[in-house]
Image (cartoon, rainbow, N blue to C red; front, side):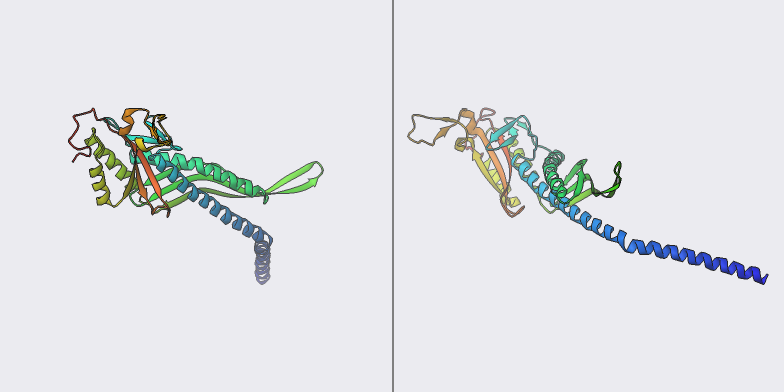
Length: 302
């Protein structure tokens, strides 16, 4: 019995030594060569993640500027006015309101981000190739959520990055050894009072709808004062990019409206100097019809 007990102890000790050696070899290998590869790959992943986040962040800003010039639209509606390099949507056209709801602005902003971020990602992929890194990204979905003080952007952009190491086994056999990093979702939160700007534009259009036969400048000015925002107004008569030249005038640079009703077409831009530390414009158009009802005594409804 004593001998059997000793044999059992030796067997157990032998197993412990084998297990210990195996574990030591595993941790040794993990802590040397493989860890070096993992560290390199992790650093590359962090770098790529930052590039993609910066790309998305810059694209959001560019998209906001583009959509702002077009009254919250990437794809503008039929009732829009060509102005400079943008199409300005009519929020009020004679007797009808065409104000986009917040959900529609969110959707249009997402369209713009998706388009712009795609160009940015292509540059990242091209630059990565120069370092031997293959990057593949697909823009699956962009969602935006606009509130009074923030904009939340959620992007599903499945991204894979890897290095290809060619292991030549023999002349007729080549195997690819690839190590792959994967990233899927990105989120960005912008502290911008974009929801308020959209709301102010909506209120101005509502004021115009209540006064369809004239432009209620005083009421709009009161709203701007109460809410603390600035605005600019462009009347078609002052726009030098449209109209026909009057040969009889002595002013060489004078352009007259093609349509007499053009004087009733107003472009309003809500101006914000704080969003990106530079002037930001959210523009839309108004077309009021003086023939809708009897003209009031004052053009501005006072």
